Image (tube, rainbow, N blue to C red; front, side):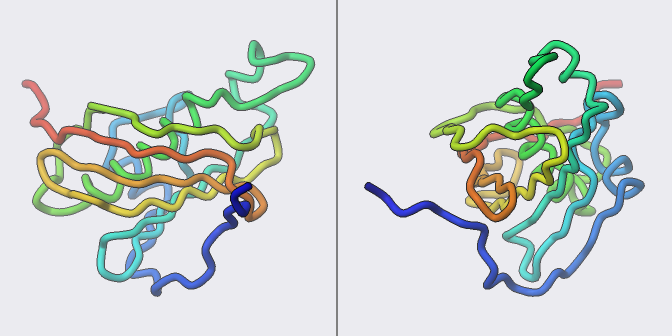
Length: 159
């Protein structure tokens, strides 16, 4: 049986922190679909950490599931993708563009995510350009909750 992966601690220094204002400037998502609260771009620009504070007031908990609220796995993936998009679209060469999902590979959900959890997304850029690819891991309390490889296209906004 494989060893349980835990949140990395040996990280390069943070080069840039994006608060909610900077995130909103970089990506078009808004409530109730803005699913990240903070983004930290690490030195070298190849790694990024996104934070999502999961609250009981999230609208999806009304139906998933009212008596046993669990964050939907697809929204964990979306939150990881928004972390990647915020990093990429904050770059001057991609400012004002959009990022569209092209693929989700190797997705696995390891732990349920409940209200009160803090999701920490660790992403590593495998390729950044008009087509980008990130290896993404989501942790709660230092334990791996979800993982995937995310592919996206950076496109111009249509007028």
